Length: 179
Image 1 (cartoon, helix red, strand yellow):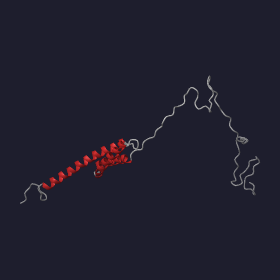
Image 2 (image 1 turned 180 degrees about the vertical axis):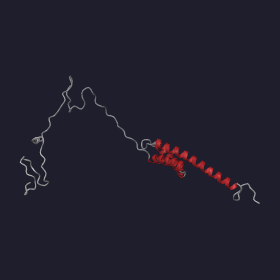
Image 3 (image 1 turned 90 degrees about the horizontal axis):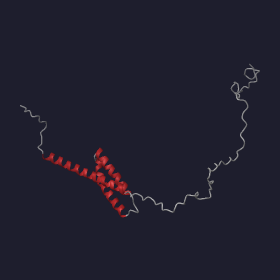
């Protein structure tokens, strides 16, 4: 081992990395590849036209044999009435909430009123507003929820009337007489 360089001596021509003390990697595949030539424009590749066809002419608007499309009115979508969407959302919230916890069913009349108003305005100005099906859905859900709300209120009133008119009980009556 050579004292001044800290690496083993070898006569086989191996190059050593001075930082690591290990042999430097060599290219096992021979000489490195030459650098690529400078960038050139790629050749234009065009498919030859099929037998009996004319080549495509980009200056021609439509290929021969296809007539130009006639001018047509594309039209546009009429926006939904904002109260139509609101009526549908209120109807969904009132029915789903009414079934799950009862209190949101109080929103059913709101859905009914919003749906009725929106549907009336949509029918009055169909060129301005769309969304009649959403308004109708909200109105129908509002009607169903309002009917359920009225039935629940009638049931509560009946229960309260029965409870008020029934005989009061005195504590725990078991049917056994005590002496």
